[in-house]
Length: 174
Image (cartoon, rainbow, N blue to C red; front, side, top):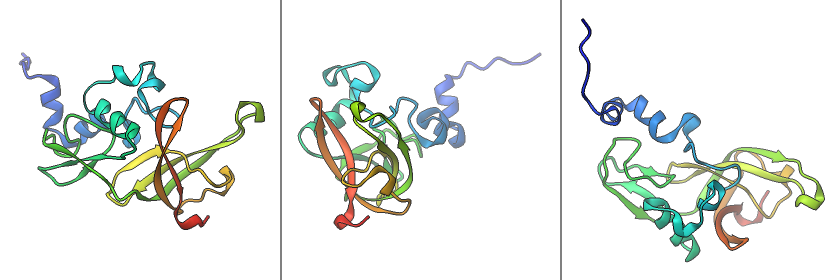
């Protein structure tokens, strides 16, 4: 007869690093709630003031013009998207740090839109120097000009009353 486990399913997953990554980061290393352009509370149907926990802290810092990511005190790895526990080791010892803002385009795609809908734009996965990858867009160059390996720098912009993290080419190079 099979023995039933009374262990909490989250605790069981946390003990298995591979499953913990899928559970906390979703497939492809991105949070399941990451939106198409740049994740924000508004993109999932809530206002910034309704966001809670680490996401609220992140959004408040962006509104103040500060880009922050988390760093785990236990395993010393950086973490993005904001979380309550480290996806690498499961520790809850996450602190906020200001990254360098330097990054490299890992992947880019052009979304074709009609001019009256804002025209074409790019969606990019950017690897920060600190080792985290995030989804955003590269501004200041034509969407077709964004290239894998392009050096970029983080920038905070305001769009429709929402602070967003975007990237611009480093030193104006394309």
